[in-house]
Length: 288
Ligand SMILES: [Zn+2]
Image (tube, rainbow, N blue to C red):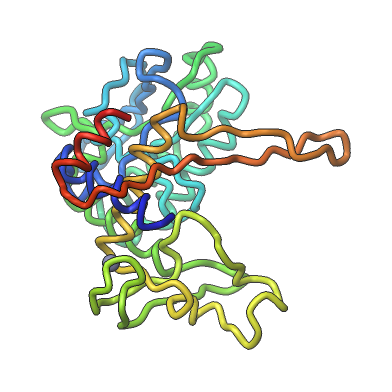
């Protein structure tokens, strides 16, 4: 099944000619026309940044890339661009603050915006509560220094974004930070390369409970399912930019009820191609 997802991801990579930043950008859980982008504006004044205002604008795919938007559940790969609603202003502002706090020692620009963010946090929360209505929003940061830019357009910020996403393929927190990578044969392409332990979009095995894999150590996860960087990216693209975009390929049903709460199971229909030729594959995928 993973090889079928990888094949879909290879197709997306080839067709969309994605850059090494775009491969990690995701789509919000609503259509671009359904939502608005709310920008916190920081302007450089007398050598340091200051928060000046917030405003709303339309969302486009191009802007999602400039925002470095990702819907990842993994804390490490979240950025300063997140979903925000009228009811979760404080918690979302807290998550953005955490991102700045985690990265402020690595870059002067981040440190300057972090300081302004902390100084003006009460105003930011109050402005956001005034600006948000009942619709759907993504919040992001813009900087103004001669010209206006999304923070994610700055090359150094993109470098940190890529680094955090790559780390996610082999670093996890199971009480303590665990790193799982090594040199081996990739399960998907058979190439001998650096392979990662947390690159699969599905958990086929558990690494945080006893009894499932005797004597197994989390740091050795890469030996259980070794996946190289290229295949990890293809798996991610296959899931995020193909299967998740086609409503007919996933559905969910109620598995039971526990404490008056419905337990949902998500199922995927993964198309697997028996045609080997690239031309045939392209035709079939486009038919889907
Ligand atoms: Zn591989």
